[in-house]
Image 1: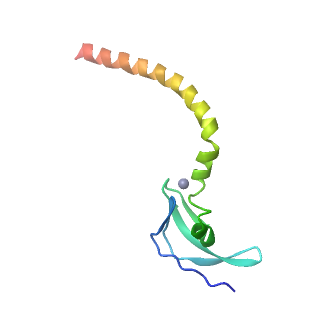
Image 2: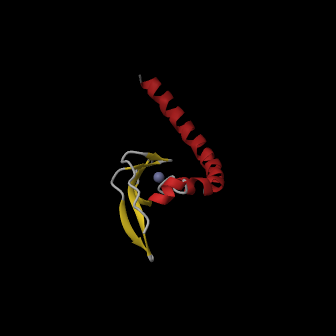
Image 3: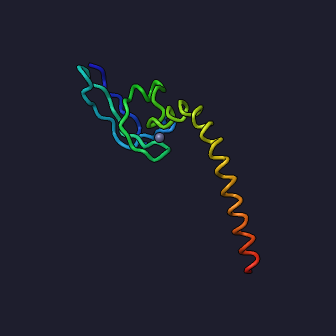
Length: 102
Ligand SMILES: [Zn+2]
């Protein structure tokens, strides 16, 4: 039986911060320490203590999504750039219209 490690509430682990007391939870055949956390993105989740301590878990999952999606996001960003240019033109004409009225 492994001892349950109590993490100090409010300790940051990567993007996560512990927000509650550690509790033991059955996972398969073994019992593991879990701790409720809040991610910097605002998501609250329960993580394995050993994963936090080893650095394996550093976010609610958003960090991994960002890293794996970085490539496809770059392509999407290029597309959005084109769309934004259109918006900027609209905004500029709106501003000049406003200036004319003023
Ligand atoms: Zn997150």
